[in-house]
Length: 605
Ligand SMILES: Nc1ncnc2c1ncn2[C@@H]1O[C@H](COP(=O)(O)OP(=O)(O)OP(=O)(O)O)[C@@H](O)[C@H]1O
Image (spheres, helix red, strand yellow):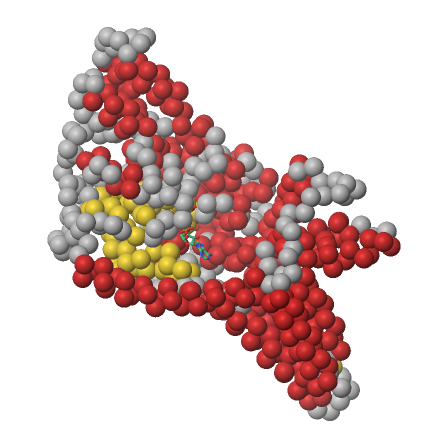
C-alpha cells in the first residue's frame, strides 16, 4: 500500500530523532532506507508500523488500510519470538487477527515456505534454539503470515554469514515479486541497492534524498555527505569508467561481472579490470547478484512508475530523485536558517536547562550518594504516619525533578510496579470473612490507610535506587560501593565480589525493564496491540515470561563470560577504574542529606 508521510518529526524525550520528513512509500515497491548509525532509520520504521506516533506531522495510509496492515521485523529477532514452537510463533499474529484454525495453519505453512523454512523440519522446533539467520526467517514468516500490506524489515542481513544473507535476499526478492510493499532499513547497500525501487537517505534525522538508486550516482556527494560509501560495484565501476574500460554504470555486482566477462580483459593478470574482477569475485558472496534490468546510462533513466515525482516546491530537485538540502547546504536561505534557529532554540534551551539541573546530582561523588541512600533507606523504614511519609514523597519528587530525568523515562520505570502496588494495597484494604452478613469482602479504612502507607514506603525505597542508578554511571557506582563496604573486608567479607554483584544487579534493573518494553513492542508488532493497563494483565505478562527469562539467563551468562574473559580474579588487588575525589559540594550535599533525614526522623517521632 502507498504511504504518505508529511512533515513527520519524532522526539525521544527532548532529543529529536526525525525532523520534518516528507516521503511517499510507493505501493508494491521496495524502498531501502539508508543512513549512518543513529540517523533515524529504525525510528522511521516504528512510526510506519504504528508502534510509535509522530510527535508532529502525519502518516497517511490508503482509506481501507491503517498501520495495523503493517508488519515489522526488528533488528534483533530474538526479542520478537514468543511461542514454544516455530509453527505456533508464526501463527501468533494470525490468532491475534482471529483467523480461524484451518486457515491459520495453511497461512502459517505458506508463510514458512515463503520465508525459506521447511514446515516439516522447523514447525515443531523451539524458536529460541535456532541460529540467528533461522530466527530472522521465523520472524519474517510471522510477519508475512497475516498478508500485511506493508512489510518493514530492520537490518535483515545484520549478523548473518554470506550464505544466510544470500538466502535472505532471495526471500526478499520473492516477496517483492509477490507484490509486497517493502521498506528495508539497512547498512548493507551492496546487497539491497540492486533490489531497490526507491532509496531514501537519512542523515541526523533529516531526509537527504529519495528516489531511484541510480539518481544517487549523478548526485555526486549525497551518500558521502550522509557519511556513507557507494556500494563496492559502483566504486569499482567508476574507476573502470575513468580508465575507459566501462561505458556505463551497472545495476548490480552480478551485472558488472557479466560485462567484465564479455570484455577481452586485455590487461588480464595486471590490469585494473582484472584486479577489479578479482575483488568483485571475492566480494561476490556478500553482494546481491540481482541481474534485473539492463545497463544504466551514467545519467540514469526515467522515473519508475509510482515513484515520488520531483519536488515542485522550490526545493532542490535534480536528476531522478529528490535531493533535500541538508545542514550547510547552500540551498538554505538566511530566512530559512533564522526560522529553523528560532524553532530549535527553545528545545535546545530546555535540554540545556535539564542537563544543568541533572548534572548537579550526576556530578556528586558516589560516596555521598551511597551514604545518603543508606541513611534515607533506614529513615524511610522507620518513618510512620501520613505526614512524614508525604514529606518524604515530596523530597523524592523534588529530587526526581531536579535530576533532569525525562518524564517519559520516569513513567516507564514506575509503570511495571503499579499493578504490584495496587495489589498490595488491596490486600491490606480488604479482608475475607465468609461468616459476616455484610458479604465476604470487608473493606477496612484503617487497613487501607496502613496498606497505603506501606506501599508508599516501598515506592520511596524503590525511588531511591532509581534516582541513584539514573544519576550514577557504572564505574563511580562500583567505586563508591567498594569504599562504603571496605571496612567489612577486615571481617573476611569479599567486598570486591559484593560491590561487583551489587553494581551489576543495580544496572540490571533498567536493562530488564528495557527488555520488557521491547517485548511489549514486539507483541504489538504481531497484532497484540494493547494499550495502558491492558499491557499488564497476567495473560500479557505470562506471554513475556519465557522469552524474558531466557534473555536474563543469556545476559547473565554473557556477563559472567565477559568478566572471566577480562581476567577477573577476586583474590588479586585491582587497579581502580576511577579515582574518587571528594569536593566541597559533596560535603554540602552530605550535610543536606543528613539534615533532611533528621527532619524526617523528627517528623515521624
Ligand atoms: N529509546 C530511545 N531513547 C532515546 N533516544 C533514542 C532511543 N532510540 C533511539 N534513540 C536516538 O534516536 C536517534 C535515531 O535512532 P535510530 O535507532 O532510529 O537510528 P538508526 O539509524 O536506526 O541507527 P542504527 O543503524 O544504529 O540502528 C539516535 O540518536 C538514537 O540515539
